[in-house]
Length: 257
Ligand code: CA
Image 1: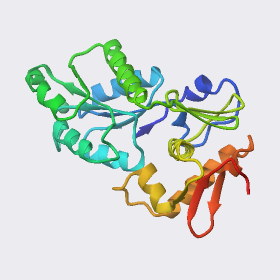
Image 2 (image 1 turned 180 degrees about the vertical axis):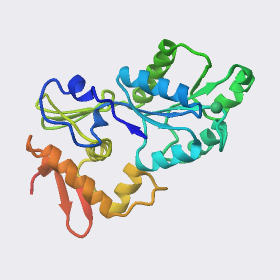
Image 3 (image 1 turned 180 degrees about the horizontal axis):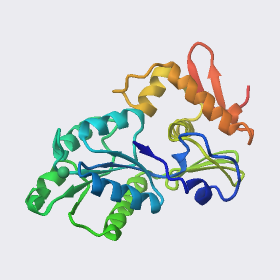
């Protein structure tokens, strides 16, 4: 269900030749969730967007999409209007009511006959819509526009701690200019930490901030991802920034105790 472009490591990792055979190495790529019940169209979208440099999650139903989003929040959702379980519109409304997904860009895919409904789609909280059949070029331009808009609201695109730099727009983390490939969860975890340096977070606070409140994940999952994050930051010497605060949780700080 979770397709990671195979060409990614060569494309994005040209600077350092570290092995990227591990899972979840798509952290450097914006993630698009494609929710479309027509399998042919869904696959075609997934393939072409992968080629355009996105990591793709895909589902043929809203329930499947919800399930995927419990594990990982995408950067953008391409959402078909008519789906077998719930309408896309209904789901957009739900997404907008949830703090975790309120600002998630959603582009609706509508069939010609449904164009009259587009106003309710936009009223319901979709950011844009595109009418089938559409050109991939146009779709990609709209995706780029949404992603740009999403990040321009964030007045800070980069977070820095020493020579460790996290770029929200390009989804890249570098240390002294060399890219560090992180899994999507590790990326979000590090982003949260770097946005709030020197603040201590409990495991449940981190679950809320990084995974979302609706998720039924055990708190030790946080420890697993902290461990992974530290491992990825170890070679550049930044693992020490991810600090355990005994009895409380974790904090990101450049001050080494
Ligand atoms: Ca459909």
